[in-house]
Length: 171
Image (tube, rainbow, N blue to C red; front, side, top):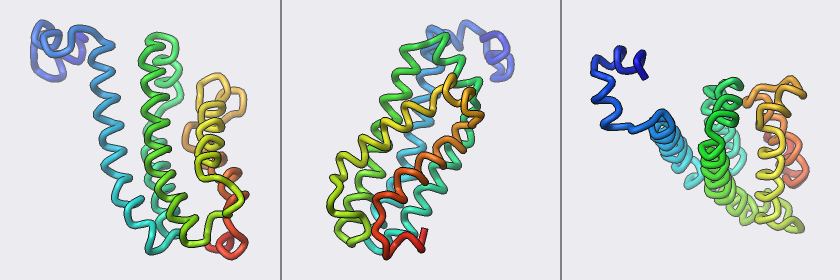
């Protein structure tokens, strides 16, 4: 907090007046980041009804951009030092996936791009389960992945199995 107060040109006392603890500061930073992600992804998911493959590519590109900002040591440190904030990250990540991918998958189903024999709710749960199982520090280290590469590989595995044959060549 000393270094941060110095960089911001304020006293530590003033910093603590706004953020009573390091966890409060981190919680605020995480909330701002997730709000930024939501704001970035919302227009893409809304536009998905016009061109599903393009919307999916754009959504994935934006998610990968945001995921690329996450450093594995940051996730590890939050998980170890502030498990309640790690839980918050998982909950917010779940919400982002449910909202944005859920809307996109529903539109893809209407357009005949997502297989009708697989529930979109089940698809979201499979995606969430894979993300939760893989995008965590011990598993990423074991598999030699970064958050970005882990997420990209999960998407490849999950989506190629649910996209209809007529759309596979467009992704």
